Length: 138
Image (cartoon, rainbow, N blue to C red):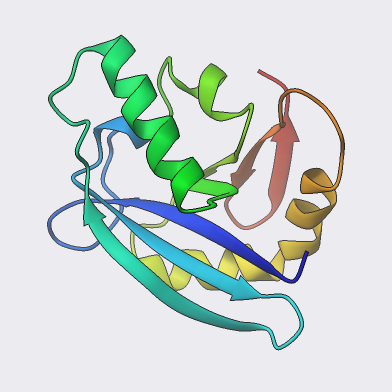
């Protein structure tokens, strides 16, 4: 794996808000090149599943993440859909609000995240990143 993609769950003001990942206003897709250690914003897209019912929301969101090859999903909270989301992506709970600060903190712990991605299993652990890092099973 040479590159890894994150999906940040953002609000209208381009910061993390106190909502679950699936209820974000938009998603910012960021790619991290493991070799060069450079990050690039790939896209920023509205949440097309925002007003869908739970089953439809789940399918729309999983298709969205899969089509964009996202492996790490980042939000202040995760709701009931996290049990579906963590089968394909690593959920990361953060406390900070500014995406640049969150990205720097995540990159500080990138090898923990890469180690989790390298494991063969049917669901990933959930990570909580504040000043340190904690991972746990749902």
